[in-house]
Image 1 (cartoon, rainbow, N blue to C red):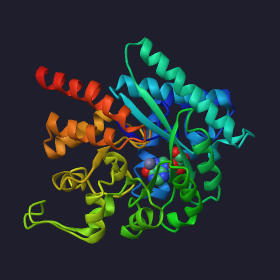
Image 2: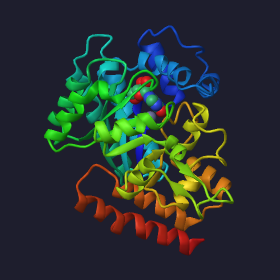
Image 3: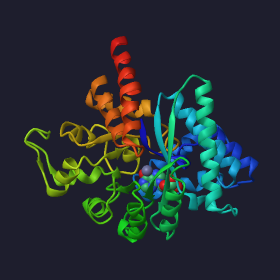
Image 4: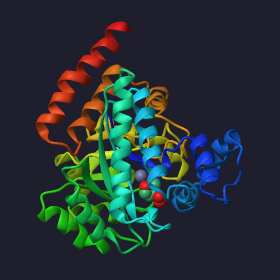
Length: 352
Ligand SMILES: O=c1[nH]cnc2c1ncn2[C@@H]1O[C@H](CO)[C@@H](O)[C@H]1O
Ligand SMILES: [Zn+2]
C-alpha cells in the first residue's frame, strides 16, 4: 500500500543512464550507474527541500518522450509489485514533461499506458497490483487549473486524484484555489504537500482554505501538539488544528527517509510518526522518491520497526490506514483490505 510516490523520483539508476544516452541528455553528473545511484542519494541528502528538489532536473531531463515516460511508468509498477505493494497511487507533474513539445495529454496517456503495461507484466510474474495516477501541479507555476481539469477529464481512465508539489515556503496553496475548487465541484479528490518545509500555516491553508482530502507529509502537525510528561502520547495536548486533523481522520502521507533528507526531521527515531501513531492519527507510510532516498516500501517499514519496535500489527495498521485513505471507491478499498491486506498479514503473522 503506497499513496505517495513520485514517478520522476523513482527511476532505476540504470534507466536514467540509458535514457540519457538514448535521448542525448548531456547533463548527468556521471554516466556510471553505481556512481549515479549514490549521487542521487547524496545530493538529495541536503537538509533542504529546495536543494533536494534540484536533483529532479536530471530525472525530468530524461523524461521528455512518450517512450521514456511509458518505460519508467511500467518499470515503476514492476518494482513496486516486486516489493510487495498491492495498491499504489503514483504521481507526476505533466507540465514538467513538455520541454520537447509533448502535449499535456500525451504525457498523461504515455504514463497511463506504462502503468497498464507494468500491471500486466507484474500479473504475468504472479504479482497482483492495482495502480492509480495522481496528477501534480507545481506550486511555483501557474498551470494548476489546467492540470486539475485534466485530472477530472482522465478520471475514468486511471487518474484518481490531484496534488500540488514543489517548494513550499513562499508558495502557499491558496495560490491554486481555483484548481482545488474545480476538483471539489466535480466531486474529485486531492492531496496537498504541506507541513514538510513550512509549518502549521501551510497545513491550515491546505485544509481550511483549500479543502484537501489528505496531506502530503504533514509532519509539522506536531508543532500543534504538546507531548505528555514523558514526551509521549499519555497526557499529550492537541491544539485546535491538530485536533481537527485527528478528529476528521485526515490522512498524513508520511515518508520517513525523505523527511530526513529534506531536514523535516532530525532522525528516524525522532520522526513524529511515533507520537502520531500512539495518538491514533490517520498516519500512512510512503516512499516519496525511491531513487533519491535509495529506498522501498519494505525499507521504510523496516526503518520504523528498528526505531519504534513496531510489530506486524502496527505495520498492518499503517497499511489499512493507507487503504482506507486511497482515492478509489469505498467498496473497492474495502475489498482490498478484506481480501488482500488482512489475509496477507495473517499469513505473515502465522509464518512468524
Ligand atoms: O517531497 C516533496 N515535496 C515537494 N515536492 C516534491 C517532493 N518530491 C518530489 N517533489 C516534486 O514533485 C514533482 C513531480 O513529481 C517533482 O519533479 C519534484 O519537483
Ligand atoms: Zn512528495
